Length: 315
Image (cartoon, rainbow, N blue to C red):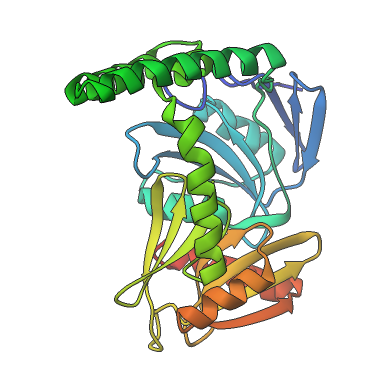
């Protein structure tokens, strides 16, 4: 049986995933050689994607195995040789579709529509942050904070900004990122607890909901709802009672999955956010931002309908 491996990393210059793919009689088998884990799925189709992620000029490559409803069963980021993947799929009787003529937003929505048993295999070793690393980061952070404090006390604001800019450049270029991040971003030692408390206060006020690391929802005026992930705004939705406008939130449970759908007044899903969401926080957020909130367990058909409807919505 012919075995395929990625030719390159999932991004330009990225590490090549240690994955191996075979297919036979409609069954796709993928082995993660770093962990020894093997996953078998019976996809209705393979989806070959390549797109530029929002807020980044970096392209992401990969293959996704889809079920009969178009939901992702297995995501395999990596620079797979597309003609070889097509040949392998053809021999196993698995149809293939591509993202060649789709917008980055549409591709992102397609990959976000995940089946209940969704998995992603990275094929890369997990990096461990050891106690030595933690001590080194703390030490360099204190040193960096001292340098920046001296610059600030002496009014050398331009020098401060220059050091910070140089730090960001080195963090992008050097492999020992954890060490340089500690020196050139020492304000994180002070600002992280402050920003964390501010975020929790805003959650308590109902103006925001979700973890600080994202994704989280923010109610903006006038009548705008933002989906924020990290430092990026993933989606901006207008609020209102007309079709196509964000009118309500649906907190769901489907089998072993939980998540949140943002719905319009007709019950159509505008955005899907898988993961746990605290019901009490959502209730405060919904009341403050004039949104309805429903909590339901979904059947397979209901979940599939909502997840697929996000494909035709603007994320």
